[in-house]
Length: 508
Image (cartoon, rainbow, N blue to C red; front, top):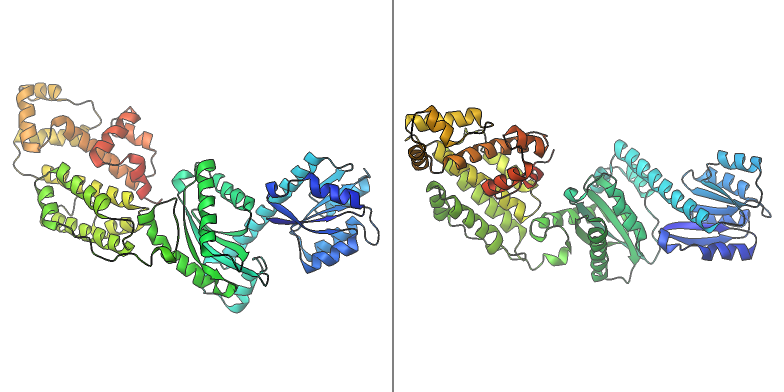
């Protein structure tokens, strides 16, 4: 909530301004009122405010003199002048003092409301630029990691609200699902929701998908209330803006010097996004009872289904491991151990059958990187679904027992996959019966010609999705699918995941 001071020598007008504005609705609160400039300046020095709304003509010190003194203290404070005089000299003086708005009396409620909203946006922009400037010089990351000198830390303390004697602060990390941010401006909507909250929240921008939040409360506030507050914030962001987030909350502190430790604890909890998923809010109490029991992987069964080229059986087993055997109450380290074991099994198969050089198959280090980039269990499952599908396809194509005509057809598909190829035209080219050619191909390749062509297109599309910035529509046309919707359908049939979901694994 932004703090506002009202300065007016006539009590009736002062009270009128106080009550014509719905301060809570615009995320502001009136924290001080004064009847002249001298009184207002003393109040400001004791407790600076974000916005000053002042009359011009007042005893002891007029509004313009007040703003001159405030400008000596702060260039950030926004000022709105109310005056019964429409004189050029007043307006010119106000312009020099960086006044937000000059409103003539009697005060128009709508004009004042708009001026306050504009002042709020200006403050947000000033704070953002100041934070960005500080970030360029030293960085909030360095501050939160405890890598600054006491002198450097002091500069960051100045950017944070002062804590009262009965105040404590809860630090939290908010991870944003960037897929739910349709426009760059949508990130501002998060700030809007934070400003509307009944509690004071300071947000610090760390990355395009990460905010460090400081929630100020009374010392009597319990952790349960904080989790309920953040859960409510998440629900509003999802229902009103369609924005999904994952929040991890640290214990409360009464000393800013402990913020690096709070940040560390909140960061450690972020890995539980894998199990909890976006839309969840947790603190350390959520993981205290987590189980560390291992998940048993039937290595023999997985190898057997892959080497038998039983795609359906292998993918069903992957589905069973990730969706049915894992429960949200397990420790997240169990999940990582399981995925690394599967990655090692697949690596052994690729080495054993000399598939390690295949360009569309990831090496072990690449898969491990993808594991730690994945957002949740579904993302992990998609990685292994794609890799198992690719391995089975290569086991088919690497089989040496092909007749010359099948080898020729496979080579032609690799070269001309964009063309509208079918068995009828190929049988005419190779002087064979179309039905007989189809039977031979099915027997040797392990799939129909149409499926082989589709797999080839999808394999090339997969490589373009993961290794280029091409748009999905352009990739569809590049591999011979003029209809993007049809491409989506065929790609998902092949890899069990949509092109857009696969692209999301790759962080450009």
